[in-house]
Image (cartoon, rainbow, N blue to C red; front, side, top):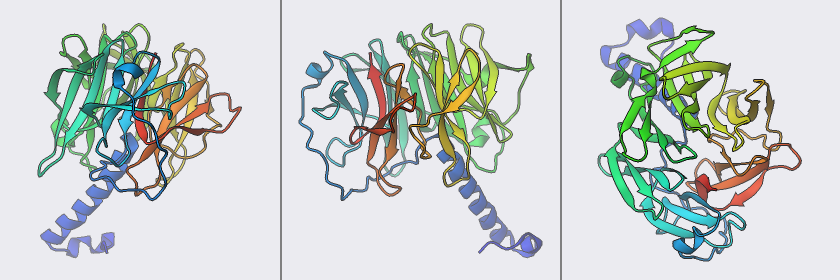
Length: 352
């Protein structure tokens, strides 16, 4: 039991250290839950009967519109990148040799964020081609959180968790993020979003505690959107790669995802307490007006993927104790409730 504040000065140095460590650990866990699912570690089996999805050749599946995703079934292919047809996603499935925590792909180029778990866990980013063959890999500075590839395949974005000290400041949570942009052709890092100039209401905006995550690219690749957190507030920012600038547009936006027609941004908004904090919302880019996604009312931690201009995809765990996730689909007009779409999968990416 933690001692009340008025007794803190009576504790020994060792006891004080344990109290501080406990508070930091709890705060760090909540911050991690804000930005991405907890580290799954060893998968936990589910007693729920699973559908019998026939195995298919990956090369056959990619010949028509398909989904890439992280396979979450508890089998030999757990965490490998899977492929399924868009038209009937549970009719057949193929799996690649790439094991990914997060995956993204567009225009023949992809990113697979990997975790090599052992006594010490190492994280890598693997850039792969349209045959799912690795072209380049490099070490990541922390645990994978989010990744996206621009619609034309030119640029990529990766967000990882790092310690606050690595960013040059001390935070109670002990957690922070690092978000980089990549040239997908060369694999070169184009910049860390913390080095971009940020503007709010036309004036420079900066703070030591800036954290960026959840990049989503516009069709021209030069423009993108992301989340910025500072002083316990979260903002939507619009980025300009060429000018290396970020402009604050809206408050309380996490993990934005731009629709294919570039007119709407789907995101999660913090509306409740720590046990069920989020609801999905939609933001009109032209008017900056928002509305809830009424087809889904649960608190879900994911970065939405657009199936088309009228429907969105997202993943959620079957329970707090299960490593198995499923992808759901929801209409943005609220004409029907969200429903299961792709079994035993998360991190869905539509290959248009």
